[in-house]
Amino acid sequence: MTLQAIKYENGTLEVLDQLLLPKESKYIPILGVEDGWKVINKMQVRGAPAIAIVGCLSLAVEISKEEFEKKKALRREVEGKLNYLISARPTAVNMKQAADHLISYINSLDNDESISAQEMQARFVAAIEAMLEKDISDNRSIGEFGAKAILNNVTDGEQVRILTHCNTGSLATAYFGTALGVVRCLHSASRLENCYFTETRPYNQGARLTAYELVHDKIPSTLVCDSTVAYLMKTAQINAVVVGADRVAANGDTANKIGTYQIAVVAKHHEVPFYVAAPLTSIDFSVNTGDNIVIEERPQVEMTHINNIRIASPGVTCWNPAFDVTPARLITGIITEKGVFRPSELSTLQSQLQDHKNSLPQL
Ligand SMILES: CSC[C@@H](O)[C@@H](O)C(=O)COP(=O)(O)O
Image (cartoon, rainbow, N blue to C red; front, side, top):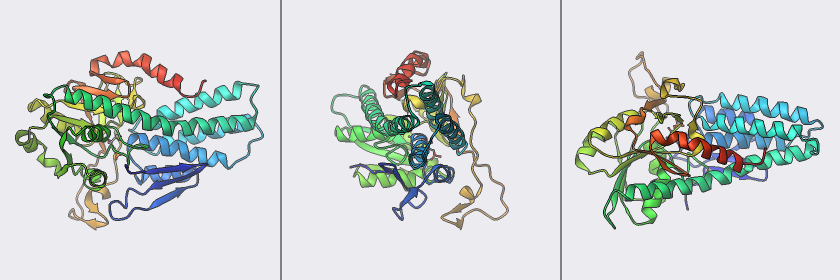
């Protein structure tokens, strides 16, 4: 049983406060879009897929409580609130992709004269609820494709050593996880010797969150400092690096948690395959290369303090980009719910992305 970071039932939403983990497991009730925006912006919920799901569910919660006499009023409210939710964190593309899709869906419901305002409202909420289920099944496919790709490079029955970064597990998704889902699949196939994972300064998603998940699931694992990665690759015979993504550009350049780029450089040096595990909703074909991805900068207090205790000398100047961009040439494969692709093959995915859109409620 993996951790459940998002609890949603019949219009009621609660999210696990990831700022309090691992000390305390406390759920925050989300009563509407304003609460959704706040938990995303403050990183009480984080991870690209979880941001999109919580953002959209916060809208479902809000509109479920309202009554709309006119369809146009519902459409206007939905569009305004989805655009507001995108502004909570700029780098992860999943919220933007979900918003674009839901806006075209609500427009099509608005244009369909056979549908009443009440029916439009019910169908729209159901479309958001379906996202939750889809994320879980996509994650399981990502896990299976990723495990298979990694095991293809080793002899039959051999166990593998994986390195991952940040937190990409149940806490970062609806359930199961992307890169950590690959680790979970390897473990359940008894093919994981060990999962090494970085602390992931400055927010410590590794030390606080990935550690919490791996210990909870009794998966063999070792926490390392971010600065240990090169020495680890030299000494521990890592079989593959698997990380998540906040946004993959059309050419395969990948924005992910700060530190990912340097791990990819080190992996190249040591000839360790470097995989990005991400759902299709993390691929942004409207952005040609990683140079055009906006990188979020976080407040310097996240560097200077840990749990409200100052660790950096007062008066110091900080630079705190939350993400970096790994060039496509350093990436062995991008693991999606449709299979594993080389960055250069991403264009073939564009048509599959269309299928993905078509698999959501008919527009
Ligand atoms: C499945 S989560 C993928 C990415 O969102 C993850 O690797 C990451 O970089 C999270 O960053 P965060 O700042 O914690 O939201």
